[in-house]
Length: 323
Ligand code: SF4
Ligand code: MG
Image (cartoon, rainbow, N blue to C red; front, top):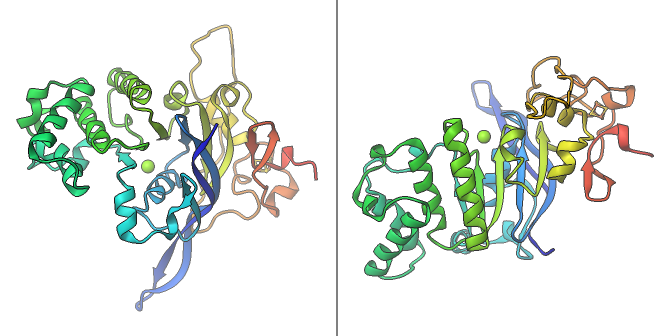
């Protein structure tokens, strides 16, 4: 398996300003040292509650948000070192699908104009070729090509997300980062859009990073899943392993809330105490210790390393460190 993307110790610390002079009084450690890789053709799910840094991570990968620290290697090249101009041309290969398709589609533009835009930005094709491509892609995402002259408000939420997906596909990208692409949709529509994304993956050789707040949503589409908590990766492994044998107490708690279809198999719901602490003032040691049912003394002072506990199964928790 060849990595398409390798992320090393990625951080984003937003300055916190205060007082009359707007001085920096601290930092929100939105992402605080995340490392993972994504193989060609793979789908990596990234899951966590709001504020865990998953969206910030996704946006940093395209440098829509500039990282504070760390490396992002795309096909072996560290893109954090690229100039703005070189980065813009690389965006051809890396596209994003957003949560709210309505907010991300210009309401004054026809679907044709919306879909044509990435081609114009990257100087791909002439006017006739672009129009042809727009119609092709509309069919590919399961819409009719004669929708090209319509406006976003004339579509349902699911159809709009299909347009968002078509737009992401226009430049023939290698990587698509989908940030909660189905969260705003009705449950019945969610699976249709997920199925579409899976079909497109094999048809167009795509690699996906699929961000969600719900472990249930990413289960079937992901080859591997990473769970984030307060700006760090808590656990990452193959999808089946994560759902069958989660190691991190936080993953165990999240999974206990996901309904299981098999009534023979019972799982106790683990209720987490307290709210997610503020990322501007995260707990020392393991950031999860204030809510963890297994917290030990060491958890309050020492930050657990993100380590391979079993082959291919990474976890940041003192329960699994043997040093
Ligand atoms: Fe819980 Fe400690 Fe593991 Fe953190 S390191 S998840 S507090 S047992
Ligand atoms: Mg988000």
